[in-house]
Image 1: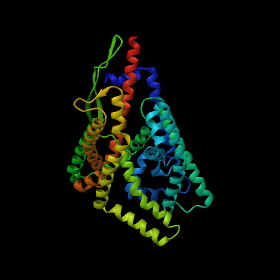
Image 2: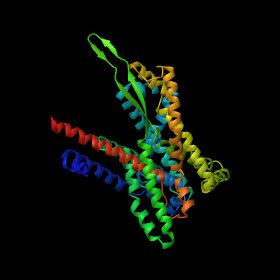
Image 3: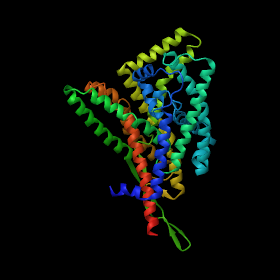
Image 4: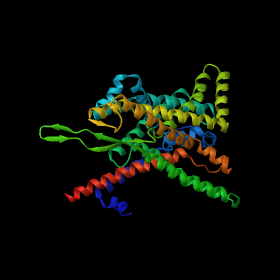
Length: 423
């Protein structure tokens, strides 16, 4: 508690937090301004019946559920970042820029991601509007109104990205993550109100079980995010002149959840592909477009098939994204160049094989846990029979991960100021 109160005693840190809160409030105001021609009742009914778009509403910071001017939020930027990371596999120069050029290379990489956000925002805004028009949520606009809305939404997405970067510059949390967190938290009052209004004595056991599951899930997410395998690393002694270097012991932490929440985003993107294909096909053939859309809607409505497929996608993408973010060959090479080695393992190829084996084993448990988080709402509703409220494992994962990261950054700033006070 004393550590928490120190945040408000340090003027500079207090001002940073107030600036961040002000920027988040500005984003929430933008998220409440809808584009023209929206039927609010139909929109709410459509989102309540479509779990996939409810998930994307998280990553828009809550702006998609109102079809606001920032309805896409930071979603296009997340997509652009994922595509850029995939390109490091295909193009060696991109890989070299990201991994070997240091801070300068990563700055260029981030700049390319921002530029790529513009076309993604334009395409995604057009696709969402056409889909909602076909569902009767939005009245059929003329060509000028459609283009105007697409441009407004694209600009809104870039504005959301700008606000996120302004927040990140204050160094009290990641701006993109905090915008997503603000959108999730904004839904809590209405969700709590619905739960209280629908409560009956017969549901007491189900509600109690709901609370127990939520607490256990939060504990599990913290354990997953903080969990790591510490690989011991030793450094050989080197004599240069009259000085001896090395001879120290350290460890290399390998995170259990190396991929974070990216596999969930990948999986949902794949699940949405059939509906977007249907919107393209309907331009050429209404019959086939309707068939594809009905198939996609029916598949999502079948909780068993949907849950199994969703779980398998998250499991597979966890391994896939971990392979992108963690390169055993590069780690083994850097370790050897710095004079380090894993005790009992020969440097070079043997160390690379060792890292691959360890990473595959710990990723297995991380992938299973992420998969269970993805299908948690379906499991809880099937077990408790309560459909009024549900636990979104994805939302909890985001909230816990962002809270932990923000706490680390605030704590590091407090620690720096303590040392400055000593000096």
